[in-house]
Length: 469
Image 1 (cartoon, rainbow, N blue to C red):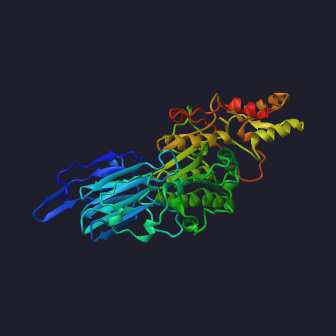
Image 2: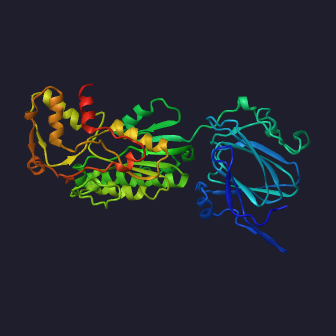
């Protein structure tokens, strides 16, 4: 019999993420009414905003009908419309919780949220039971499923009606024992732009870790109209977007402008739509160029954007788009140095070749090495830091590009006075093509990411370490 008069509440279970909800049911002589799924109220109680896309109902004629144990690659909200069930859930996910069992009776006044990878089964306790569930993905023959035998001795589920006396499908009877079950892996990580400087650093950071995919532009074109069908996106839990158009001067030309907007805005917009639709965490790398450089104190994450060039405008537009994704990290960095052509290696080569370079001295910022960006991104993901914008650069005393160059010369055993400091205007005085405006001041405030437990590398120390390799 349905329990009337409950207060909406959530109760955790021994299985991580499996949560039982008591539902208020209002009844009179005509019958009863309940809010079976109410997004605002239930997310306020801590339920993941799991984005259901399909509602299924399984009607069961007789008491004792038994189905399961099935673990699917999506989340489920399980309840009953009529009747009553004995439900059994077994954690079939990779990890320390594998094999944990929870059982409960569910009537119209109770529901349960079943996270991806947790095996689900039930036995009807009354005839004419309507078992209903919301799921956040559509069934697909290409999806990976896992199953457990209803009679598994390790799980030892105490079925109210013995399995020998109930209706079970031949397929459910043939499912494996727990020792033979293939655990459900976590949702995968996809690194986009894996052939760029940051992409290569992320490859190095993740190494051969299982569940991490790397995609170059040849593998995955973000501007392709078929992007939404390019992968089974529900299998991914995180996308790290390390792809970008970064040729800031070329972006001021007609051809470059189109390329910058295509890669930095249209491509990011497509990723954002996919992330929002499939509950994916989107990590996007932003830039100090979203600011005009006119500040006299380090820029905070919530300072208003004010880009002065095309590249900065595309990055600012992308930030605004990514901020609409429910699960997002915008990682704002500056003066990036990684594997491949970069300022530090260029200065070292000039020093060795006897060249005395003119280097800009009126742009102030901090170097950021790609391995530290990769480390910071992984910290945000692994620590479960609050979603939002985070500044992530090297720490320490701000420097000019000329300061960096002299440090490189000195570190390589050359006379640092060979570096000739010049203004930005002097440096570009004889430039042949369009020159993008640069922020004169690019120092970013790091207190927010430090508060999450991350320690940014000291930029000067990292520069010295790089020179000693």
